Image (cartoon, rainbow, N blue to C red; front, side, top):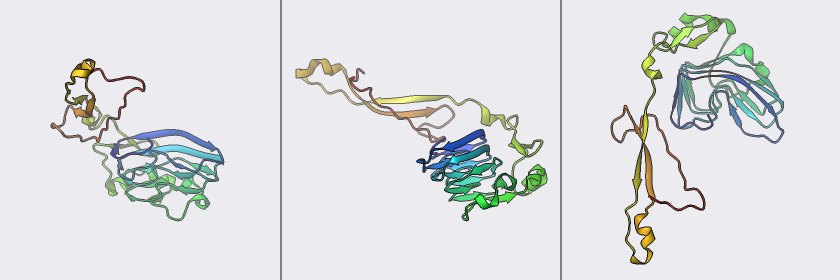
Length: 219
């Protein structure tokens, strides 16, 4: 994801991001880009970052900013970057950790948010339960670190049906333009969530639309 303004929960990301562009001066996040108005919880990133010509890039293990809880970064960061933040650059991180063995200490910027853990501690279930992580409904211990358990709390994994509430503008009669008397324009399009009360939008869904250039509405 690029910019998140809602909630990211029970999400995991793996892969490799390689930067080889001297002109790139943006922010890279292992889970999301920016989440200044959003929240990340019960998630983790194992993304590995590498940079060979990347002195303008800022790397964050989970997100550049926002609010993060009960999550971790376990990837590696290797290269020359403008700044490196194993969890995030700004915001708040509660019970959120990163693998200190995956990043050279000399690469880490001073204003780091999040708690570093040695690789061996990631294998300790008791360490994370003592930190408040939910191993009954969300997590399980894998071979080397906590993993999301999608067999638990399956209600979070069910499909959510989303409909559209399309409102049209009121037609206006004009005797000189009879052809347009049967046409109108879209006034608004809003999501309708199957398990929510009318007018509620618990997942902060947004509908963006535009008319194709060169066409006219025929509603």
